[in-house]
Length: 180
Image 1 (spheres, rainbow, N blue to C red):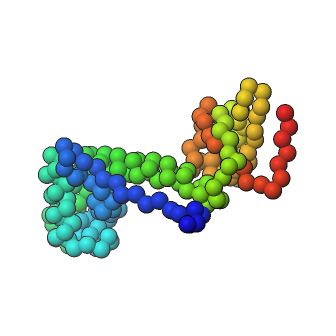
Image 2: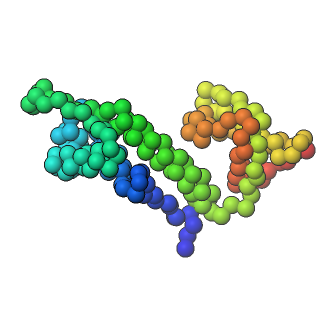
Image 3: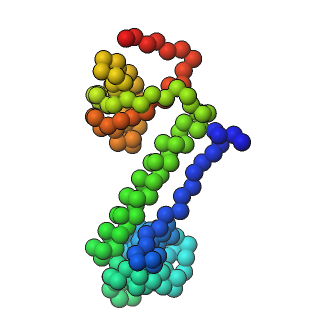
């Protein structure tokens, strides 16, 4: 087994009262409806038939007990479809849950990609100095001991780091200087 090659995959769906409401395929369909304004175009975009997409929407609405898509008939050029407030909220909840699950698994995958890391230290973020390209994170280990890390500002934003939160520093270096 090579831990560096391990990756996690997740299958997430929303249920209500034991009935499936929304999974990855349904979320893709709702997103495509938002983007295209059409069930037919959304179905084409995600590679399913119009009949399948329509049946899937009806199944979600039946299990949820609310309409998630409203449509206006009018032929090729005048018809449209859009998500209801419930449909938008459902998609938002799914996307948030999926993003949180993915972030959690990424935090496990990252140390695996470097090999099993023994040099990790949990710190409490004391200060963040955000720059245009790079940012500095200063964290405390003990009362008077601090560690500083330089990361890209893009990484800072994607990790959603905030002052006062705990954070793990993974140290992967051939040499390190420690000053107390």
